[in-house]
Length: 77
Image (cartoon, rainbow, N blue to C red):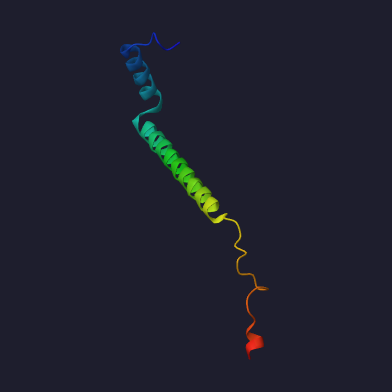
């Protein structure tokens, strides 16, 4: 669909967009979009770290030394 668009057509579209929105509005939109992408990436990294922490701490319980098996200190006294 867009394979027939050449560099001159893209330049004309860019000029029309600049005329409609202006440079200040486009600069603000670009910085807002960049901030949104940065926030999304940091949220994805935090989600990955949380998933790793959950998988690391989800080891099976250790039942080698249960309170019933530990020697009682009261008997020694």
